[in-house]
Image (cartoon, rainbow, N blue to C red; front, side, top):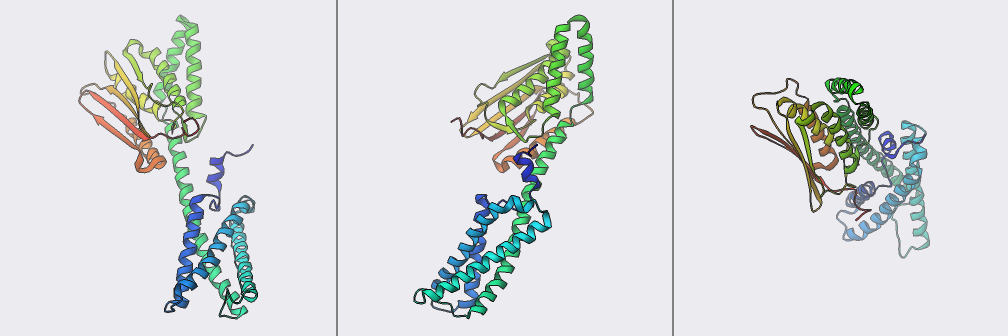
Length: 353
């Protein structure tokens, strides 16, 4: 079975040289090297800019060709193992550097009026070899550290999902099974529907590890949870959905709405003798989406377990990983109401709008 792209990315050893961000960094490093080399050799020369243009031309060609070559060979190199992949990459880039140095020298011999290298052939190639080896090693080390940092972000985001998946409270499963057992005697058809809902909910919570899902799928999972809790709480629970303005194809970090709805019921509705309403609202504001989950709270009553804080902390950190400063997870807590507000960029709509 082929691994999905996200899995392949977390297992990658080498940076993604096909990515525009990596190519930009490579070109930036190359130009900084060109400036440093030119300053060292011709810092007081009146022809500094001319020499810089020549050096930049050579170095940038090497940077772009090297990126293209590594982009094409990345998967094959990683198949040989982590250490060997870096050794082979270093050797390939160094050979490319020497090949370009030789081409540059030959061009100076064929076009002496346009190109001129003061050093002899051996000195020029040897100096290029030494500088190239140092720069390639440092650049690959930097790109590797940067790639590992990105990998750690992906793995951390996946661990957040796993933590949320593990937050299905035992009391919910016990209560659901007791409710289903009671229904088998009074309403077998509804008991069968409840079993199917519980199966779908468990599949949604435990069966996948995708970091992103559509709003439609996220709300469907939350609605399944609502139906199961409705069987147990009856008229004490009423969930009002006002989400018609939201684009259902938009992407959202998975396992976001259902844990918040669970918190609203477990820490709010269950503690109220007469129950209450949970209000889920959503709206679009330009390029941003806002979702709010509000529930009433019981005065002077609070669960001993603080699972809601753990779930909120997980969700807040996953939104920071996914969107950075563009997303916020805010809480408004009053004497008789509790509200969680999610605000994040509307993504995943490019193909439909």
